[in-house]
Length: 285
Image 1 (cartoon, one colour):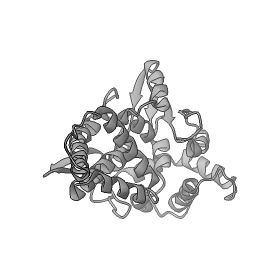
Image 2 (cartoon, rainbow, N blue to C red; image 1 turned 90 degrees about the vertical axis):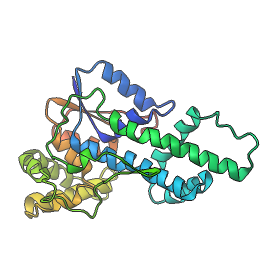
Image 3 (cartoon, rainbow, N blue to C red; image 1 turned 60 degrees about the vertical axis):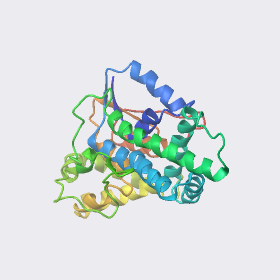
Image 4 (cartoon, helix red, strand yellow; image 1 turned 180 degrees about the vertical axis):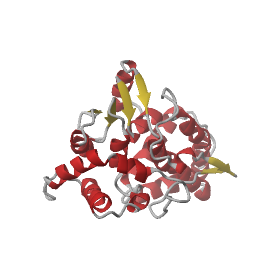
């Protein structure tokens, strides 16, 4: 069986969270798989999420010089960006497991705070390039490249005491500048995409199965295929249609592996894509 890995799987694969049931299930699947595959678009999402999160939090630690101020900021910021907070909380948890022997003897509270901030900053200095390098481990190379995503090859660069990485923002358009082939891929997958559109239209907007992302995907499909606004794909690829792109770019002979059950349970059957959703016991991704 050939497995096509979604971005959510890479978060679990890379972070090595303690007692991670999703990671355990993935490792079990991996042992019985013929091959593991991923795309440049998935790598772009991984870079823009996990690696960029680590870079921004490292910058916060360095600018404040305070572990507790940074964690307090993370708690406030997490009210608006819960996934960011969850990813960094997991990183911090693993840091504490691996660095429980930091010597605070003879230090007052302020000095301990600064030392802990420096230790976590140093940990991220090692972790960030490791997260980038580990993405392609065990995968069939080269990565599937149906979108030719320019940002999939952006490495984290050390700038003084912190890392920076160039990512695609929701406000950047990259069609001509970066030779994106997303539009070409979507045109080639028109038949499957229209099947999905037909299916989405049969689900009432008030139906709890129709998430906000699925509503955005339906609006996009209508704009792209029916209204002919094809350039919109270059602007919206970071704004809620990622699951559509990854689903459509997955080749038919692959089994799509994800934790994202809400969207995938609708998308994959509609586009006739084999899939396997890895769940926690409480059915959350």
